[in-house]
Image 1 (cartoon, rainbow, N blue to C red):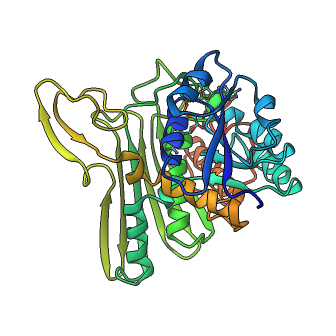
Image 2: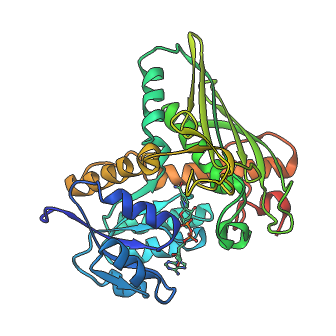
Length: 361
Ligand SMILES: NC(=O)c1ccc[n+]([C@@H]2O[C@H](COP(=O)([O-])OP(=O)(O)OC[C@H]3O[C@@H](n4cnc5c(N)ncnc54)[C@H](O)[C@@H]3O)[C@@H](O)[C@H]2O)c1
């Protein structure tokens, strides 16, 4: 690359894009040039808040800026493919938030478009950069735990903040799609990308049937070819703020990591605090107050990695192929929940959205 910095366009202006903008403030060689959101006034307000020089309501207008090297997609799941393909055609490197897209055909289109345009397709999975989980993986890699036997990961909160997550047409599925994707990529990363042999999943819509046809609780079991088991527990019905935990059980040891509680300030307040942690509905009484939440989750580290890959033309840790592999496992999880049986990979079941393999169209 000729330029000294990687010049970035942000797509979206709400929850995750705010995290991206904050995280990028600490990323070396990155410069945010523009933000785009179709909702009138949002991109402008976002640009003012973060001192970003350009703002657009139209994607093509942002993509027409020659100076932009890379875009980061923080739009709802059903738009990831279309935005990525258009950005690739405009010659931009693409970072896409999880899950990669809605189905495997879309994943193939994104991968092909980026390959044809010779731009990088980078899959944003921050758990592979979360400092506590990076240290956890080191314990395994350096032999402290012996050979891995069981990997566990769990994310739980009381449900998403925006309507598109609840609408399976736009999201593709419920909590398995939204948070199961984190656990699946986390297991693949810990386990050296060993192939997954089978998937079993139990899903239910236990509390939020008034809001969604998607799953709000899920237990997903992965069996890897090397014999390791991955067990993910995901919930959209857990009150009291976000939980994010992982365990590695090995032949010579065990390690437990809690990203949000272990690091937090245990607080009791009769009035409640201004902000405790993501998705903490009420903070009256006991709460777990986080500090440096974005750093503790690994977002600046993740974006630093992607910026460095673009600047130095290096291979990213997470690519479109990883996003596709995660999606394939998500499809198998919904298929298993639908059939009540363990699903062997590769599965031949196809659908436009993973959710359909559980409950039909
Ligand atoms: N890595 C994580 O932990 C994490 C956390 C939250 C969300 N996400 C992912 O980020 C994505 C966005 O989620 P969010 O929580 O920010 O949602 P959000 O509803 O807070 O924001 C979505 C944004 O997309 C914009 N948008 C809508 N239509 C668009 C279009 N046609 N073109 C461009 N932008 C458009 C909206 O204007 C809004 O700014 C989802 O795919 C979600 O899964 C990842």
